[in-house]
Length: 182
Image (cartoon, rainbow, N blue to C red; front, side, top):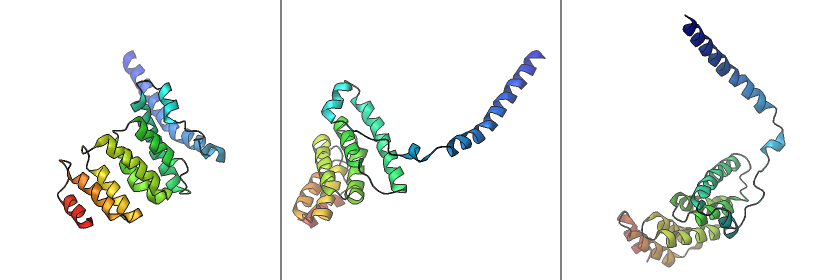
């Protein structure tokens, strides 16, 4: 009997706590002033400097920074569409973890249009081609697309598309696209 009473009291306390969470959270969210939403990123160190602080943990920090990058992009995309730290953040992720493909894809698709800087995307993608080689056909494909779309250099675009076509997982139409650009 005593045990059943204790169990019922514990269950009731848990239900009351769960019910109280929502109004308390709404109250706490409502009392935040504008400074709480201000930009948090004030300094992004150089890769060589940060590597000294992360011996053996570069990939873990790159993953953390990647999550912060996506959150940063999303928050600015929904508000002011100004991304002053985006290039540096993606560059840092790809330098700390050169085999992290999603960062290269993000650089290819977002940096040229939203940051207005196809040169930064080109540099990051060229580093990706050097790091990944033909393991991933999409990085040289995106680099070829970048050369075609933003620089109008179809010969260089065809070279990167040809390189992408050598990947074992590349779809056959990439070789045809490279031939068209030649």
